[in-house]
Image 1 (cartoon, rainbow, N blue to C red):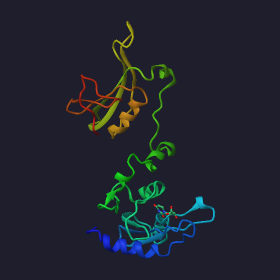
Image 2 (cartoon, protein in one colour):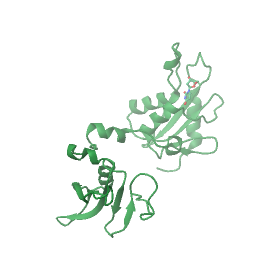
Image 3 (cartoon, rainbow, N blue to C red):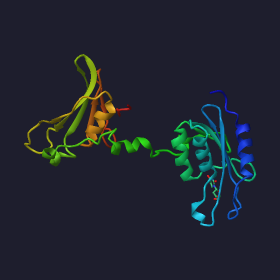
Length: 235
Ligand code: THU
């Protein structure tokens, strides 16, 4: 994708702003988005006697995006009655996040901002994967339920039939209780992605330690890394 023609996008937003239906607020808004195939899709706000059901200009953009062939939004300009950039409301940020993702650019008074800047820590389809089964919630066996929150999970790189994999084990930490036995509580399966092994760990204990293929130890548990494992796992 070449340079974004913000002038053209703003002009399209300003033009459609004049079609807004705003008898109640008298606050017309227009929005225009550049799609990844080069299309420009537009929308204006549409109000209603039942004030709360107002459709923001960005809602029109999202509908138009799909009505005219779909694709991803690359950049969006949203303007007020003066043709000045207007920041999308919270609800519209959520809508735009799904259609453009974190790197989608939104015009602001001092230059474009990314959706990641406008909606940090966003909720999205990735979060739903825990209920659709695409990202299974790690289950702790009943017999070990009493150990939840205790011990330490060690996530480590390993080889399974010559293939590099990630695995984990959950261990009673020595000294957890005076005189308590030490040793492994549970062995985890193999994963291709260390993030899954770490998630398995978080379901068991706030103490999660990663040992990579080079033998370097990282903290992937809750809170600040302890003194003996000062480096946080960045993966
Ligand atoms: N509005 C939008 O169209 N988009 C926004 O992001 C902010 C608000 C509209 C909704 C309503 O018709 C008017 O502005 C005043 O809130």
